[in-house]
Amino acid sequence: MAKTALVTGASGGIGLELTRILARNGYDIVAVARGAERLEVLKGELESLYGAGVTVIASDLSADGAARDVCDILAEKGIDVDILVNNAGFGDYGPFAECDWDKQDRMIRLNVLALSHLTRLLLPGMLSRGGGRILNTASVASFEPGPLMSVYYATKAYVLSFSEALAEELKGTGVTVTALCPGPTDTGFARTANADGANVFKKSTSSDARTVAYCGYRSMMRGKAVAVCGVSFKIVLFFVKILPRSLVRRAVMSIQKRSA
Image 1 (spheres, rainbow, N blue to C red):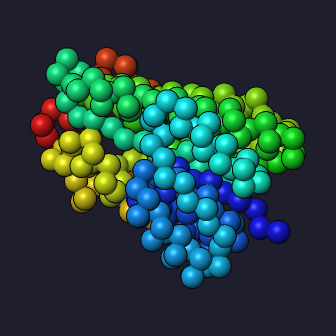
Image 2 (image 1 turned 45 degrees about the vertical axis):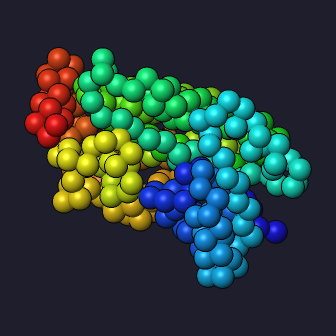
C-alpha cells in the first residue's frame, strides 16, 4: 500500500516540484493550496504520469482554523500522512513602518502558525505508527536579520529553530524533521513579496525550483536536520556565522536597499 505525502503550497514553485518528485517515487499525494483550478490540473498530471492517488484540498492556510479543517478532511477520508511538507509561505519587501499590516499578519499566520499547527496535528499519528518525515521550507534568510524584509526573515528564523528543536526531540522515534534552507529561487515568490527588482531575486542569481526540491527531498529521506542548498550559500552562511551581527545587518541592508 502506497504511503501518503501532504504538501502545502503544492500548486507552484518548490512545492509543485516536490509533489512531482514524491509522486514519481511512489507516494500518494495530498496537495494543499489556495487555487482549486491549479490543484485539479496538478491532480490530472500526477495521476496520468505516475499513477499516484491524489487528493486536492483548496485552502487558505492563513485563515483561522484552516489547518484543523485540512486534518478533518483527512480524517473523513481515512488518510494517514507519512510525509508532511510544510512549504506554503510568502514574503514582503519594504520598510516595516510603511508595510501593509494585514499582509504581515497573513504572512505570520501562514509561515509560522499554519506550519506549527499542521505539524502538531499530524505528528502524533506519525509517532503512533513509529515513523514519518517532516520537511519545513525555511530559507538562508533563517540565519540572519533581514532589514526591508524584517517579518519574513523573522518567520523563517522561527521555522529553522522550530525544526531543529523538533529534530532533536524526536531522535529515536522513527520521525525525522528537516529544515530546507534554499537561497533565492526562481518561483512566484518575488512577485508576491513586491521584490521583482531586488538583486537577490533576479533570475540570474536564483536557483531552479526543481534543483531545490531535489535537495530537500534527498535531505529529508536521509533524515538530515538542516539542508542548505548550493555550495555558494554554504560559503556565505559560514561567514554569516563568524562575522559580527552588526556587520551582517549592515550587509543585508545594503544589498536590499541598493535594489529598492
